[in-house]
Image (tube, rainbow, N blue to C red; front, side, top):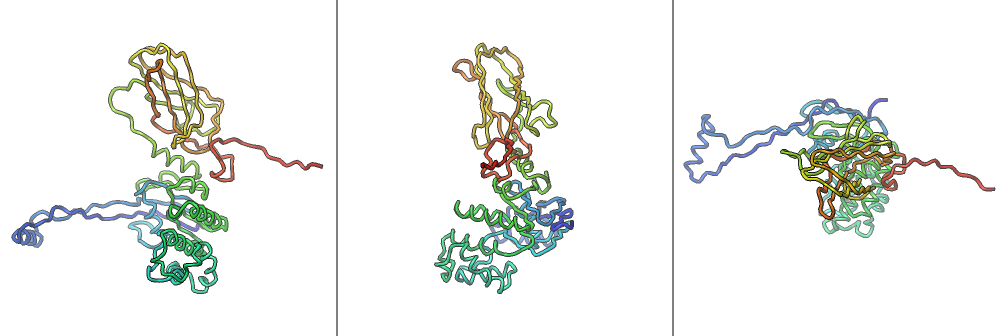
Length: 399
């Protein structure tokens, strides 16, 4: 199959000029500096620093694929979309797009405040590549989606921010493109409008169009996409199944560096034993967890609690153990789970140890647990919950 989008070794460099102190308190200072620049002496007033927004990125997206693009701010996501949309040229490499391209990169670009809603629909639609006949055909659908019927003949400078955003998204979303590039447009507007936008994006994806979708909302990415590309500092860190891509990206946000110096009095490390990666769960079970504990004082009658939770602090499960006796030194706690049927994503271990009413240590353990098991539910994350439980379903006809 011929790819709809091909990126070959794409790189983009920006040259940033950092100004050095250039204030001249006297005319003599200004003249001396000017002569220095002409005759090649004196210090320069600016320095040039090169920043690589993209660094050798290559991928292919086939027709009908809906691919998410995730990564931190500054990872190169918007730069990538601008190159694919033809807004900016790459420094190196090339991009090939086959089909009509629609870009929702900045909702509202092309709107003129003095023009009415109707006039801006035609104006913005023309900028997006829509012909007048096409806009005529879709005008009623655009106005209905934006819910601005009463204000269609009003200049948009009098619109509320919500009305403005709704109309801008409606125009862009009704462009019938073979390839759609979307950058964070679902982050605007109120909750009801975001749901409406999400539904429209789902409808677009189900029509078989190719979509490259940028969002900082992992739920939106997992709901809309079946594949995701994780960009980090201008390079691809992972390209594959959407749940695993999002989990790897979220795990990178939660990883803490090891503390320098001597081990603390308490929990210092954890790992899954028998796994190819000590912090990644690739199956439902059985699972063996080990947590390392260092003590500088004895524990004679301890209470130990272990909690598994989401990054937002929602407790998934918890276990408690009493009557623990520990001497000074390093100990390894081992936990055996017959199964951990968790939805793909990122989780955290919280461990606590008390001696009576006195806490020995309570810690949200460094390194997140990344779950990459296949998801059993197929209805999307909005209905899936946390548990990843298989279910056999049948319908019996009653006579």
